[in-house]
Image 1 (cartoon, rainbow, N blue to C red):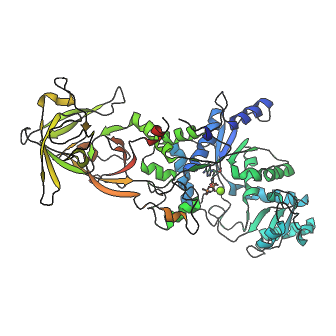
Image 2: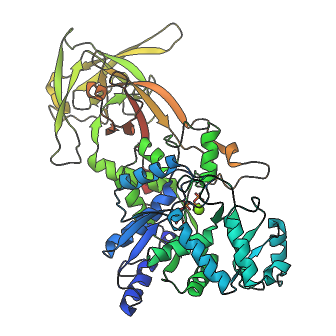
Image 3: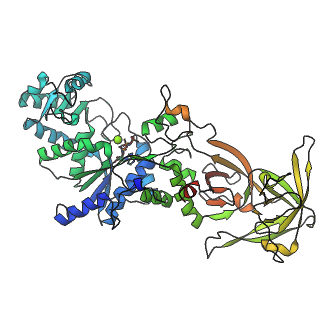
Length: 560
Ligand code: ATP
Ligand code: MG
């Protein structure tokens, strides 16, 4: 069932990252394991981050080590407290606890001092070239780069200019501090990368203390080092940054973590970039970051995904060294695996058709026993009311039954789940020819849905008693996009052109009485329909249920 491409594990079931760690421990390079999860607080976490969280916290746990949560807050224009709060909530919800809560901004002073160390070693200089000139002078990987006149500045001049940069004596964007490495390196990241830029922007934590901000490459590795991280696990696009990561550490002669790269998660029928997710939120294509169609952790939570199902998903996809696309169905499959064992069953009718049981006493009703979860050997039970008039799904009756149709048609007998055998005896149409109700006769001896004399029926259907049913709002969610790779848009189109107009259909269903009880969140399997969860929009007199996923498991079928 596991796609060969999704993970690379050795015989003793270790992934390649664990193999590297084992080697380090054996050789004595490190004596314990310390990882970190380093989100930039510029949006909500998504399922890709969940993979990274499971990996970093999972490895720390496996090796009896620790994992820090570090906010990579070096870009004050895009970062907000709301995002910091949501990130912490999401990690806790997944079931992980960080060791230290850290902020790259707490290291700004140390980073500044280290920049001075590099300037004093003639390994960094202040450059006045505009960004376009810097890029142009880097030329191409196959050609030597061009040095600007600032590269030869004296150490004294650089120290003075850098101090002035910090003191706010230059306009935004007018100068940068660059590492002095190698303008001819085939790796463009080594062609004198930018360490600091001037930016007059209030920072959520350091307010207006700083007007120079470190770039990712300068902040990240040094933050890892300050925290004595042993293994700095990141996604593949940072592989080309690794020589730079190691260069800074070596020049500063500080604690040296090992950077290890793995393939980022790409999931079909969705997008993963925070910038694009923000576009969906701001453009009101969705109701917010936690819209149940969003691939964010908060969206998946509201949709009804459980932490267990997300962790199972992360475990199955494992870690790979090559990028690939994981099917969305795998995530749904994990949810079904989890909820099939744990979710209580309920009956609800989405598209009701009335069935009148003509031989059932008028004005009477009774309570029938139902097992809450037949998959659970010690399941509790509940009682459901039964009466003369019940609702069934409209699709559970056919006037002219097609081949192999075993549900209601005149003359056919069907089992009503937990109730009785009922034989269909007729139906009634309105003036337009629409079927408005059907009739049947029940067999009192089949109470509980058991055959009284060994006679068999081929179908069991769900139902609710009409006078006891509670109306519930049901939000039927489907994929947000119509194509597997919305990021791969045709020319002239963007991912927004592939939004699925049918991704949310809201309807009123009739549920058995217990579905009117206000519990948030409560996960259920609506028999024969799918898994549902109560939405936080619910109130005690208006219950809202989200469809998490239908029952049909196309993923398992495809793999058979
Ligand atoms: P995005 O491009 O979605 O904004 P990002 O990489 O900029 O993502 P960060 O907040 O910097 O987001 O990421 C925090 C951590 O999560 C990083 O270590 C990053 O490598 C990891 N990560 C981000 N996206 C994925 C993904 N799709 N699969 C696995 N790990 C991811
Ligand atoms: Mg990032």
